[in-house]
Length: 543
Image 1 (tube, rainbow, N blue to C red):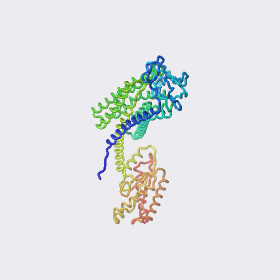
Image 2: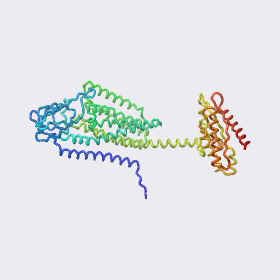
Image 3: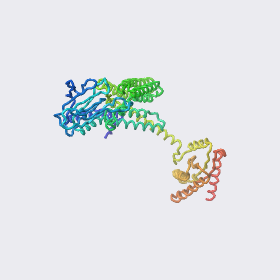
């Protein structure tokens, strides 16, 4: 049977399609929930009377303050409340002329005058015939804004709000998780000296999530401080333009582009202007958002310029160029779509972020998959390099370090200013006899067994420097070296007894002290070698 092969490109395409379908399905499900919900609640979106008898829909109110009344005599009020969402509007609710609720929050000046959107569920006394709304828009040049005004069960109303906000909240949560993962990866790759720009991309993802979560209304309900969430929303938006441009500049090897400090300066000036003007009550974040939107447009143009310039100079490969163009285009389309919605919206206090969220997630998918693939390629290349280095410094038969590794260690010791160690020369006795009488396979087994015993006996570095020759470097004094030799001879006797080789294993040794300033490595090696041959003669004399 032929195996099914799915490429990374197809997996990416499937993921993108699933994200888009998820957005569409979430919208359809929310629409269905709202239709069902409206069947068991009473809408108060229209039929409001002003003092002069004019009838209004809440979506078509005139600018400025207004007082409206609505009859609720025919509406069942038991177990229900007046549920609504207010947008940058102070208001008071009266039941048959008696005040039952007032929303006039006072927040620190730095939060701005705008509190964005907030949800209210107001109990109305049973038997109330008429309710009155005294509406005061926070900004005099705007109309009062109340949305989804219903007489409804508060639990169902709250559930409907969460259902509507949950897809966007989940998207923000996904972006936050992706961002934190990228930040973690960047910390890991930085230790390995990699230059992959995961950190900037991770911060960008988290900031987009922080900015766009405002639309879901969930954080406002959890914190009960919509003004704070609104300020964080605008401040996050101010920083957003710089991050993707910084990422792209790094990705195309142009981190020193003068465009980056220029854009960073614009962002800092924008932030300073927003904080100062809002703190002194001169303007509000929502009024200054046009400056931020202009900065976003400038950032998009800078990003495209960096990518195209890098492509013309052949600074990036074709696949990465296409990935950047695709990701940047998708993100830009999302931002532009939300900007158009904002411009065409009846309520200019609300900055849409739905399509920016979608564009950001797709941008992260495009760029993230490419970066992960490149990271894996770098890791594979590093693994190959490490393997080649290991093979170059490792003896193929015994697994000990070889002569080349010993030469590196020798240079390292000679370069130190204060060091001392014991050099132990080791040599296998009668290896030629084993090879001649029992073959080289038995000789190799003899060498491997000796190497294992030497490695287990000496606490320092062990090297095979020749056919039957080994060197061990023991840190410490002569006593430590003699203890290692005693362990080696004890293990050798045990091996001969248990394995019963055709020629008993016997290892001759000789040691000498090497100390910087007193002798040289060469003289210490020569002395150890002489003592090893004396040991060899002594052992043969005993035999």
